[in-house]
Length: 446
Ligand code: PLP
Image 1 (cartoon, rainbow, N blue to C red):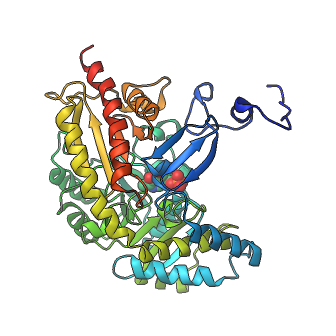
Image 2 (cartoon, rainbow, N blue to C red; image 1 turned 60 degrees about the vertical axis):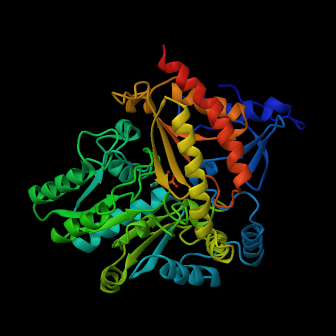
Image 3 (cartoon, helix red, strand yellow; image 1 turned 135 degrees about the vertical axis):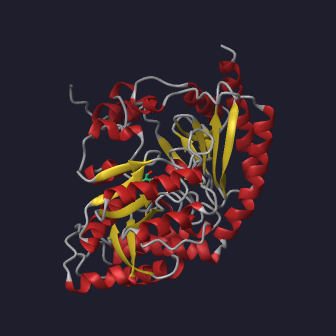
């Protein structure tokens, strides 16, 4: 591949073409990668280099929870970088100490001590290692409809098709069924009892059960109220820990601080990223209860990164958490979630290709079907790792042409706008999705 000289004054497409040539796209056949240059982002909107403006109805990758104009966070980062851009993890900053304390305050129950990293993937990686070190056991049970990250440990506990090319992955990972009432033959509460039996059959070898309390990219799966408490009981009955992966469901997304709060469950370990800084800086966090924290007083925590607790990232985290509190954004997500849900119900009434709608707060999914009776999906799960676009991709492309960016995964539109969104902005984005759903309605008839 020839090296491209970057021009002093790039033309409109030059940036995108140069980027495509020299930068890998993630999770893609590179020939299909088509990066779009963003030149501005403000409130809940972003603008591309061709002058088009979009409502960000998925907070980019379900992470820009504060929208794109959280000045308090930008200023905290700039100030920290000017003051001390970087200190090694064996030093600290005021923001790191305060963020550690604040996370202990806002997370459930006895969760009290945090390991900082730079992504959700690393937060999960740390959780796996901590659970193994603490229990002295090796196996991790996770579920098929899940995503936990891209490195070898975190992809090995991931259940969705993105794991397939990285298999066999690390040893000791086992997949369980999911609480997926719409598409699984197992009733959600039967699926949790199945996990009980799995633990029984694995003997005393399981370190932890790892779940997203509300499944995110695998389709916004909300379990029944009793599911997560029962899962915790099952884990503890068998000497295993419960790890809740709150990378996507955390920080107000669900109308509560965390997905675990929706079910009143206190996990033993919780992983966080995304909304932790509202995406203003890359930061991951793994918080553990005091019993696990105490264990590492006399046992080495054999884990760390150069950028663990990076000063600019923890400054962003602290300012972000203060913003959630000062602007009552968690309560707001709840209220706006109600409004959003009414509009999604209307879409479901109107469009025969809407098979199911699910969610809480500002964390909602619209699952599409080409046959509502038989609940036949438009695409297979394996489509996630094959080439070409699906009907659901065409739905989101059409929504984008009508002014709203909406993420999708396999068969489900993932709706997760910034917590700052207004009713008018929701109306606007719903109109764009309405236009997109005509594509799937038409595709049913083919
Ligand atoms: N865990 C969950 C539940 C996620 O949704 C994601 C990313 O989408 C991850 C972990 C991985 O986070 P990251 O992409 O920041 O590494």
